[in-house]
Length: 197
Image (cartoon, rainbow, N blue to C red):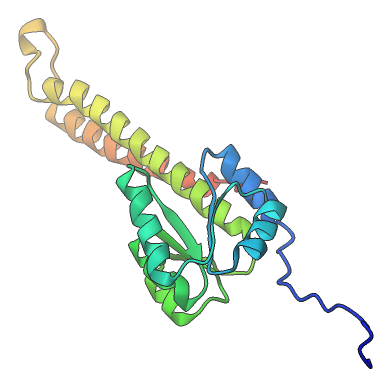
């Protein structure tokens, strides 16, 4: 007032309470977090330091963001992108897996592969962990079915008759059914999944 300094107004977006823990958990899962933003360097660096993000790209346009995704993919890396705005949609569409947050724009939702259904960023960790659990179960089912059939089919086909090993056709049918049932029961074990704390 009258040339006298009165006050300072500081405006900033508030970080989600669990943002830092989510970044820590990503590092524990051997996933490299990278921040790509259109904000100026000083703002981006302040947010990145609060979250514990080491790799940062600031003042990026939507096309720049998509090009960064492509650059990481060209290095042989699988890229997951999380975003909520129109500016993020090209990178979301170009990434291997795009995550859109619940309150994101419709365009971001359309471009993403997965939409997190609430405002809790830890759902990102759960989505990644659950997908790894499911893929591990698929691999186990495949290995088990392969081993089971590798042993059972020659017996059922009569290949071991010269060695005195014979399987009745009815028993072969039961064995085949048991193979399918065992894989089904193994798949149902996914219901026992518990998200990380």
